[in-house]
Length: 317
Image (tube, rainbow, N blue to C red; front, side):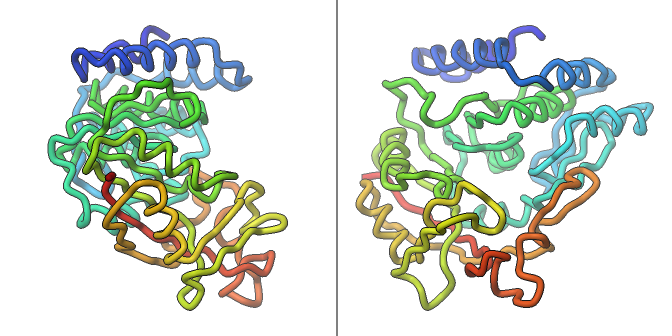
């Protein structure tokens, strides 16, 4: 596998930090110890040549021309299972991912103007949202996610789409070097409740934004009537081990304000349903259905309130 991130540094001229970040990501990917990495790389090498193209304004982005042997492409892409974020159409093959991520994007897009913006996406998964951001005319999307399988899925997308200004780096927020440039927008979706210290996470997001820059925060929240409350699960939440804190919307807004943001506004609150998150052939493991109590649909299997997700928009002071 040749250089993956060399072109990234050229997307923001004279940005030494981005050049440093590109080199760091390259080293991490080339030396990553994951045991399945050789198999995933072999799958990428089996993808057929196609004419690169990208239709990014669709709920299901269409990447690349249709391949001659769709069955072979499907088998190769299935080697990168599980596909969590989508839907996507790669080389004529429809990937029905676990999450109908287009539904979340439809709740976010009306509230954010990304035209000509440079965006940092924390916990970006396979880059689906970055594609949608480019479809909304963002100039550059730098995504970071430490799960190397998601990077492989992003590379599969690039095989069909070409060198788009959407990147997925195998890094966590904590891996980002100091001296970061000031991005126009920072997204943190599905990350906050996995942080032991939410306040530190929000403060770090603030440090990556220019004054007036946009924060888009999407996270689990408590149901209406518990706006000021905080759930700290003693064990698992919805079968997830690493859920540390779920706030009510008022408490969430106060956290964001204390971290150096203004005009914090919860623009959407939506319960998660099986129309949006479910098992499919492209993600055949347990999903939302198994996380909900079998006799009380308002509760998780552990007895907590079932998943509700909020989108909060704010501006950096």
